[in-house]
Each structure stands twice: as structure tokens, then as C-alpha cells.
Image (tube, rainbow, N blue to C red):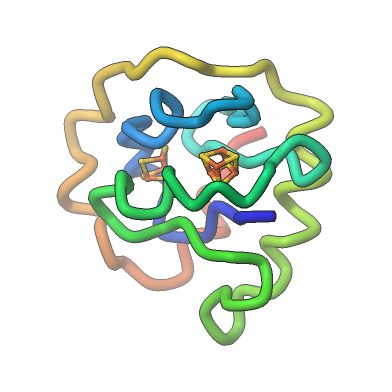
Length: 106
Ligand code: SF4
Ligand code: F3S
């Protein structure tokens, strides 16, 4: 499956959700995840993310391997999102900031 990684936190553009043919994006307060049991590896979401936060499971950035398990865990707890919404007003300021996992809201 594909995985949403750290740079989505506090950016949350949600462009990704509209292209998913199997509606496997789940929404939390400031981050989205992909349900690995539903993703069919179609690759459509990957280029939609303006901050390049989506990767194939086998190709997540070094040091972010924990996001594979985090997507699986949070997909079970959070509701499905299928329609794009406006990103946070300060989304651009957070693009590329390091160590954003500490800001993840559940
Ligand atoms: Fe959905 Fe395809 Fe992205 Fe998987 S790869 S989350 S099926 S758009
Ligand atoms: Fe996050 Fe990118 Fe989707 S910022 S919500 S993975 S478009």
C-alpha cells in the first residue's frame, strides 16, 4: 500500500482524497492516513500531494518507517474523508519542517 508520511502533519491539503478510487483516506485533526487494507496501489494519490507526503510502503523516506504502522493504526480510529477541504491557513509555513510527528493530534 501507499503511506502518508510526516510532511502531511499540519499541511493536510487533502487533494489526495479526491482521486482515490477506493476511498481509503482517513482524517484526523491535522493529518491524514491511508488504510493499508483498502489501498489497491493505483498510485493516483502520490502526485496529487502538494507537499510530497505520500510514498509507497517500500519507499518511505529514511527515518519515517514508523509511519507505515501509524497509517494502519490511525485508519482504524479515524473516519473516511472523500471530499477535499481547505488546508490550514498556515499550511505553507509547515511544508518541509523537520520533526513534525510531535505535533500529531489524535
Ligand atoms: Fe487510494 Fe490509490 Fe492512493 Fe492507494 S494508491 S491510497 S488506492 S489513490
Ligand atoms: Fe496530506 Fe498531502 Fe493529502 S498534505 S492530506 S497527503 S494532499
